[in-house]
Length: 105
Image (tube, rainbow, N blue to C red; front, side, top):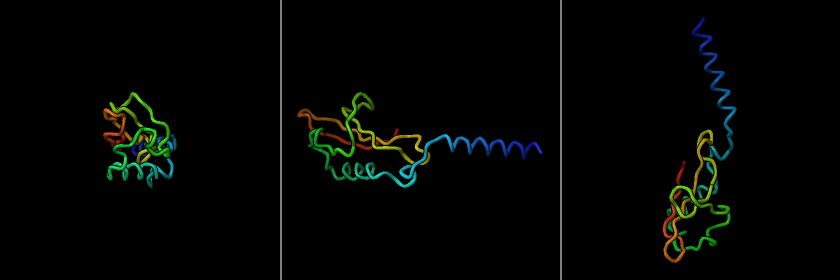
């Protein structure tokens, strides 16, 4: 009897945790902005751009995190959307994109 009560309690806690964490379609099926950023990084398309020329779909750049010059929040990352996906951009001497990468925190 105790084992059954324990199992029900664990199940109730797990369901509660699942309901408390936001889930969206993007969490399970991917986000178009993340896919676009991955393609642009892989192709080198962002290299040489001025920050103002980085596609507006990624939003306003932020500074001061991840050790990158600029970072863009792309959206939730996988599963229950606990983590986020970011586009990191390092600028070269001329202020143009010298390096870009997509990471998850």
